[in-house]
Length: 385
Image (spheres, rainbow, N blue to C red):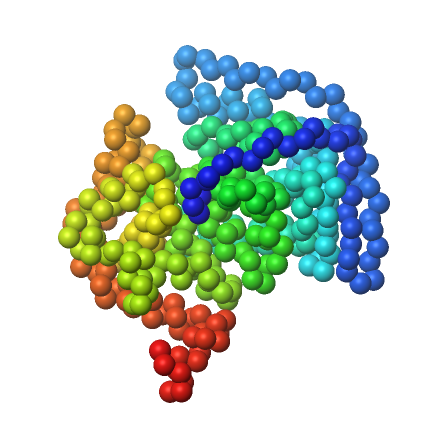
C-alpha cells in the first residue's frame, strides 16, 4: 500500500513435489547445510463450505462457520499441513535460500516463502518483535476475529498452494516474495502483508516497509477501512516511530517533508484554507505520483497523537465498526474522526500545521544526523545550509 499497486504479479509456475521440505543453504561459519526435512503426507479433503444458519446473528454465525475451516493441529498447537514447511534456527548469520514454496508457523503469524528468496535464520524473531512493537505504539491488537474476507493471495503468489493453512484467519499471513521488478510494490490487507525479500534480509537497515505494511494489517484487523489519507497516515506515522524506537534510519520519512528549496512537494496552503475538503480530495484521489494521501495523512495523524493522545486510534477503530457501508465512505470517515476527537478537529489541525509540522521537521532532521553525514555537516560554519 505504500504506493498504488501498478500491477499484480503473474501466477507462479506449478509447485514442485508437495512432500519435500525446503532445502536451506547456510553460509555462516562453522555451520553446514541441514538435511531436508521429511514431512508426512496427509489426505487433504476439500474444505467444507461455510453454511450459515438463519437463526443466529451474523457475527456468531460467521465465527462458528470459520471454525470448520481451521486446519488440523498437533499436540503443540502447530499446524499439520500437506504443504512444505520450514524450521528457522534464529541464527542471524544463517543465510537461507528457499528452494521451493514453503511456510513457517509462529505464535501469531504464518510466514510464506516464495521459491528463490533469501532470508536469514532470525527473520521470524524480527517480525514478531515488530508486531509487538506496533501493538504497543498504536495501542491496538492483532488478536481478534477478522471482519472481512481473506484476499486470495494463494492464487496471486503461490499457485493456490497452502489451501489448508490459516483458513480460520486467526493469525496474520506474512508473505516474503521475490521483487518482480515490474513496478509491483508491497501491500497489505486485513489478514496479509506482502513483503519483498530485501525488506527483511538486512534488519540493521531495511525494516521500514515491514513496519509500514504490518501497521496497515494491525489497523485493518481492528476497524472498518479508513480510506487512503487516514490509513496511510497511520502507517507512515507508525513507520517513523518504530524507526525511532529501534534506532534505525527513517529514510522514507524524508519524502513527506516540505523542502524549503522545493515547496512544490506538497502544497500545505490547501489545508489552511479548506482542511476538510482537502482531506476528502486526498482520500478519494486515484493514487498518482504526488502521493498526496501520504502527505496529508502523516501530518494529520501526527497532529492527532500530539493533541488527543495515542488512544485516539482505538477510539476511531471502535467507532468505525458502528457504521455501515450504506453511507458514503469519506463522509463516514470524517464522522468517525470527529466523534473520536471534536467537531472542530480539522480546524484545529489547520491551526496546528504551520508550527507543528515545522517542529516535526526539525526533530526529524536532528534524529537523522546520526545516520546522515550531510546533515551533520550542516552544523559546520564551513558548509552552507
